[in-house]
Image 1 (cartoon, rainbow, N blue to C red):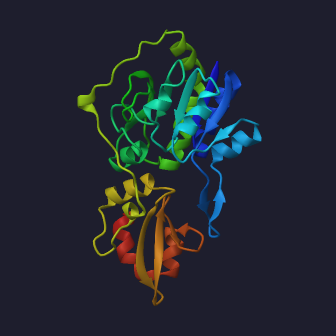
Image 2: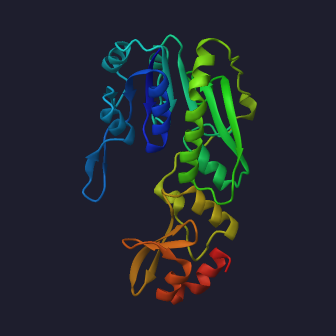
Length: 284
């Protein structure tokens, strides 16, 4: 069976590996190279790098124009698998493969449709989460459910860890789901739209806190775990007679921009004037 994989971040490489092991992955579609680092050099996505290393054709369309559609059609794919791709895929593309497209979404749909389901669950202090496999349609995270993997969230969980663990679990069961889906052993279940909730795109400002009006301790803790490693929880303040950006990280770590993260205790050794403010945030 010919499969085209759509994905972008390093966390979905296990999904692509699983597909390559069990099926014929004829191409990979990922987002275009982006500028990154201090030198703002164009950098390929982790998925593009992995695919190139394994001699798999890669497409990086800016838009799904007529030329891109024709490129994709040439691969004669039977199925698309989508995991954290990062762009809306139009119906003209989804209708190309004979078996349609399966999306792996890191929430228990219909809860938390949209781009930030993991962060939203952590911000809300949820104790239950999961992964959902759906047959894609033209609406965002709307298609019928093929399979779900529920699990509990721990208070120590971060966005970074959950991205890794959720897609690793999905990769393990994906081959069986694909086989059962194409042989019609799975009965797709329509989502209950009346129970649907939606998430928003994050910006750098979502992580900003005002130390003159800090969040409550529980809210602060949820933010630190949800926004790691990006955008992180951060603030601007005057230290040593100059303005600095301070980032608050999991495990009670604090980082002055441009320096290495340090423990809460070590930070206060260097900046004792911050003690009263930070005691309220860190429950000291």
